[in-house]
Length: 398
Image 1: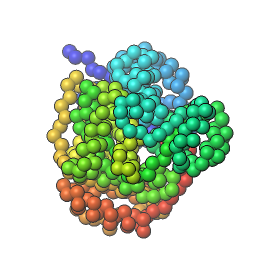
Image 2: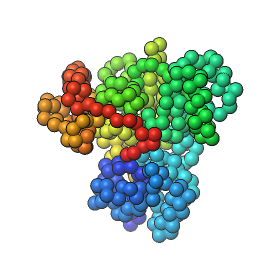
Image 3: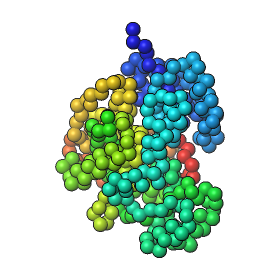
């Protein structure tokens, strides 16, 4: 009789429900390691055999304590696989795999998917365009960079996700003042030329280092602008036949092969500058946040969380049939506790966000033009009826 596999899922945030549901459907024993502050979260307990909680302060875990705790757990549990369900858990999972000698992504490869400096250097070595950048380390190198690269710049933490902790820098004086504030934390940052343009994301399924599936979308506004200046967040599927979709697919394939991801899912971002060229921004070895998995599902019929679980837990993976439809997502902080979404009643509206002080929806159709039309109309309505802003936290909150 074939022994039942055990997978340890690590999620310091409330996500990955579909992954764990699919893992249970695959007949796997599912363990969850999560933050103590999430004890009251609606985890899919019917799919989880046991939940273990790590004490967390500001969502941060003591890594040494985590390694000791999981090692103690492994005395009686034979853990076959470890899955990091959030960007902030990729390093945790890699450290545990290395320590327990469990197959999967180790420290070196994980670094390419978490460290913005490492991924830029590797992408550049592979022939991809990246915005000019410099590590905040050697002051002579920084001064040389400032002498040849004109502002504005962006000062980015190497290990954060999304727009968290990013600061726009408009002059050398402003940079040095910020570095004084950072003190001994400076080496954990990089400085990059700010490039104006449209930002795109490519979401992928990878097996045996080959991209089996990818789909490209364009953000309505850059996520950094949405986060820092307060805007409505949106994204729409690109026309499959567009030149942009073709170029993004090619560059995404080249990038992921160079970074060494053997199997899994990825969310990668590129920017198209005013010069018409595409520049790599960042990537990750996980499902995209901000409900992008739902956006991909309503455009293609593929649930990235479930497909990820299938390919992790089976020796052979077959990509299901998918549709070449189109979808768009609109989300915003709302001034109402529970926004009234009744006016958004077109048949193409297939999903509504249910979250206090938030408004959100997804539009789906086989027609790109129809999705684009509704996106434009509804974005205006979001601004007039719901939109409000709040300061971006220095650290992630959920």
